[in-house]
Image 1 (cartoon, one colour):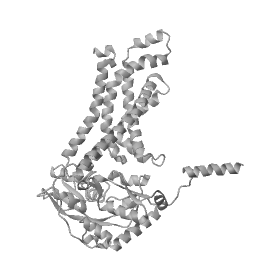
Image 2 (cartoon, one colour):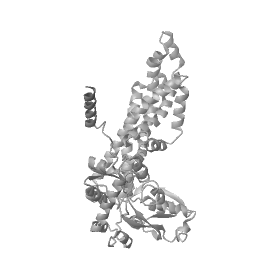
Image 3 (cartoon, helix red, strand yellow):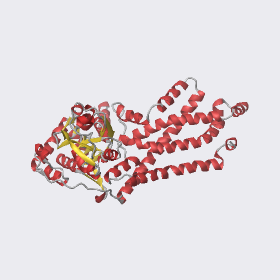
Image 4 (cartoon, one colour):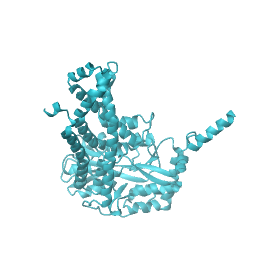
Length: 491
């Protein structure tokens, strides 16, 4: 009877997926769920993985085609996962996606952390400067100068090794814009990037190629079976000539690709000028605004009650007051971006939060510290005679706090809480480092894809204003309708 019961429980757990042993094979897990997830950053722009305005905002790029081809070879579909480029490797390590595929360079530093597939593209590191700047002759001449590049890349390391002041960028067009406006002295990036973006700025010129490298797909070291399967699939693409055709469509063939058995092709002209926003991109902006609003609302729903609890503890509990005070001071004294990184990446081995969960919890915990100070100040603003009157009629201190003090304090706190919520709307832009595409991240993606910042930036600013202004009006309405105590209104 006991054995039958145990077998029944085990069967139920297996059906529910609770008791099933986790497969140690990455390839088995991918085939079981029917998809290969790959991480990349759309902000990297053309020709890697980007939204093509001429195709209704569809995700395109030579790496998109590569991901689709590899997934087909594995018998599954490919699913793109947006992730900030600078955190692709940490996100891969924590299991956010199966592979990282986004112009990731094979370097000794990265090879010590992840496994790489066979290379799928050979590139050169190309140095760019303003026309007529005789200071920039080669890489060695950049010593002491400001050189724009991508953080954690081969060009970043080369610039630092040369003694340059390497300036990191998240996108690929921004360093060229800064170079044009003399905010930096040179740009060092992959030739595939320079060919697409430097030509849009006629005041810039290529100085020369200073090094060579390879792009490869990054995988977790323990996923050896997946790496072998991807190598076989990539090798078959190269041997069949399909990969050569893909590179030719994207005008990426050249003599360096001979090592990959890809015939050289023609080099196309660089497209110049900005592109107008499409209806699809406007819809995506609205989706980004909705993501911003939802994350901010839920985070504030966490921050407000937690902040009130912290304020009450600091005001009423001598035993717990030091802990509440320490929380408030530590959280307020450290950057919210650092807290998001620690919560999402640092604690991944302890608790693997989803991007949305980490964003909401991170912002909620951060703003709880600020809410605590607002509520504490509001409680202290209540005159002592209110306490004395409540206690004089026989109310216990807790009842006096709950029924007399807090209702008045909460009304006083309304303007400060509303102001904090508007700040939270803007700080939610930081969650893009957690693979969440909110309003600001959407703006940067569109700005790079459309080769212009003014219109996307103006639309982004307008949406932020439209999100925050109704809450400011609501708070003022509450104040005018008697939300504030009479003695507060007279001030």
